[in-house]
Length: 352
Image (tube, rainbow, N blue to C red; front, side, top):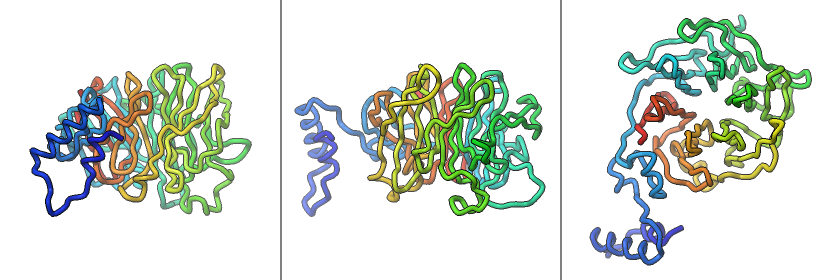
């Protein structure tokens, strides 16, 4: 990295330089190397934002603080901003419910059941996970319990557990438990299908597929397997120009974010590792999970310690340090707010 970064990592000794001298040395090295000084958490003022590249300050104020909007959930996930109604929806997976957060009103129950509509009681992560507002204004859901991608048929302002199945089987076998999804402007839906919603996960006797896939649902309802090479495909997003598909792999053994080129026919090619977080996995809470891409192509990806923020070219700009397992995030309120689902909480932080 830069010389200033290396200096800040020097262990303390019994004869530390004074803070002023340290600041002078860091500044001199930064100028000499033609690089920008790294801002540490303490320098940021609150410890909530870690600036690794000064370009981050164009997206978020380093002094911004994390706000709690709600708490007490068993595992919060899948946030989506509903522009039409100016509210946020998010899943509480084990409790099989979707909650609604409205500015000035707080959190209320929105939809239950949300992911499992069966009659036989079951445990595990049975509710909805990823949520998405479709191009035509419907709520799309990754339903763990029902093991499908579904569309809620009721209007967004009058929710009811009335669902249409969009995909639940591949080659005649039931999907594992669809996790996250995104829709292309042409109507195709891309989604991931790990095994987190199965009660015994990889060992669950109800698991029918031998792999965890990334799929595309075409507008005529065909389900196409894009790749089965990831062990735990999780969060998924498209770049603003829809030429790149990003997929998180939430494996402790292979904690990576992948990028794929989207071909003209909607499939993917040229898969490559976008970023590897092996150095931090197991040392900070959480792993690769959900993500969001802003209008300029910057990527907000949940990972060890909180939300990692990347420039479109892959440079790591910084992190929002929730310091707890953070499942997903989304941007709302005209791009002014990043909402984060973190374990038992719904959090937010202001953007530029």
